Image 1 (cartoon, rainbow, N blue to C red):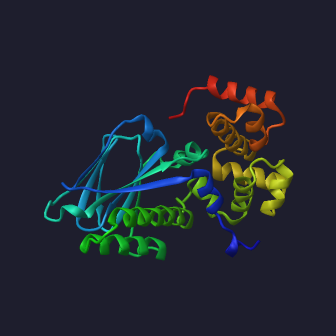
Image 2 (image 1 turned 180 degrees about the vertical axis):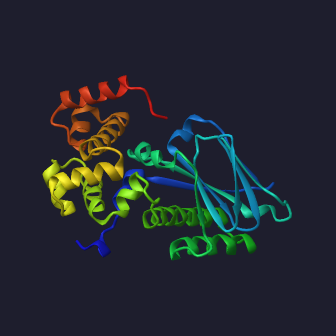
Length: 275
């Protein structure tokens, strides 16, 4: 598969299973609060017109429209407009991640990410235009249409983050931005239960084992084996939570047997949560 045709996001989206709900701000102000269900969610704060200020974690950031700000929903925040003359220009998309790899994905949003939408790619522009049109002339079925626009907005955000990685940064989006590392990541995302090892992943990336292991760790902040183990554990935990039993959970997640999965789950429970 050539890099131009490599789909970096579809398998990741399957593992995230996002459910997007849009809401408008009637007072030109949006707030986020600590709630248990927010631990697996992302908030996309969308300013279509004017200026606003984001207050989060004791810091503040001035936002100029059109802009999109992505923050973890479990982080308390306040986004308010400087002028209330046009109060329906502040919108939030609540992205509930119902898939097993939500925790790994949300690690990439420990800090808010702001995207200027003035000259963005077509997917984001399409969502912006749909939302603007609906706000200017509301019609029947508005909530459903805005939620679909929220889906496009979320995918457009992911495309932007992959196409514009942080300079000298690390993490999932930087890994997906590297053509060689991306091939290995997509392979793991598509077939996490497969018997991947360093040699096979290096072959996917078109690199030597040493070069691949070094580059992967530099890009992703962890060795390829640990990244794959985290995906498998998340898949297994989701299967257990759904009542599928250890045997089936071990099978779908690629563990050799129930004992191996039990040890992995016990080890994970004994470690303190990162967030």
